[in-house]
Image (cartoon, rainbow, N blue to C red; front, side, top):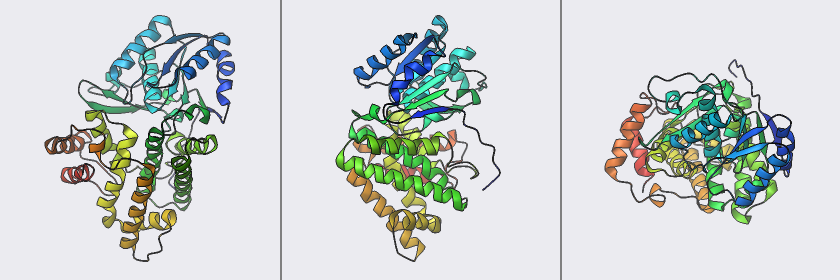
Length: 390
């Protein structure tokens, strides 16, 4: 373990039925709140939450539903409403897009700065935020418990992220019953986000016996939950367990402390594709991740061999052969969940020329740093993208 300084101030209320604590808990603190919801959230959930807040003395305002890949325009509109109505807190009901949009809105409303000033050009520091309360309806990013947010500029087709100490949510109510009507396909996409964020530190090349075992525990638990959910459909117990794996990896940040920098190659590449084509982030990670593994595993076979043996039970003694077998088993597992294997299953707009441009843009926008375990060149990124579009 490297030296570390860790804090996560979010109050977590977790478990089946915990949504019933929302109004009572928040009514003791706030009187005017903005309710922000994701597009596609069942109206019954929205109505029930809104009524719960009002019954506990909270005046509720609403804004337009948030799209997947949250947009700068959504933040601007919601921030204006917060300033006009003197909103005291924002409650986000939905997935990572909704919660990230709420964080950006809170920061913009409190500082008076346009959201783009946090992200592009002469970047301004985020020094204040309206309190944000997160109510996740999917196990995915873990953003319900951290201080980061990602947004998409729909005009430039670029994504960017920011983080600040004041952007930690004040409360997070994690109730697996909110996921009961979540389409299986979207649940599987979210699960890929959980795995991907865990992989980013597991595959960063830093050796820590405790942290490696901790990550393996999360990966194995996530795979067990995914297997049950893919086969049998929604189950509050297994979905609750999956939500907790999201909380324990990128959410609380426990998998990253004392481990150095993450290998963000898959996220970096996927966000370039998702920003341009507006494809689902988790779906893209399910496509990119095994292709990235295949592309880099021969350069660090011992790391992927550990993954193969400890996660997939591979017995092969040769590291290179074990690594390849482990990746094959992961691909077979993902195929059984119905997760897409090519971007062409998500959009028909992809061209080879655009992939070449994307590879160059991804490399340049990240100052030539894409991947830590195996640093990737523009040509490497293009090859991974091509593999992901077969």
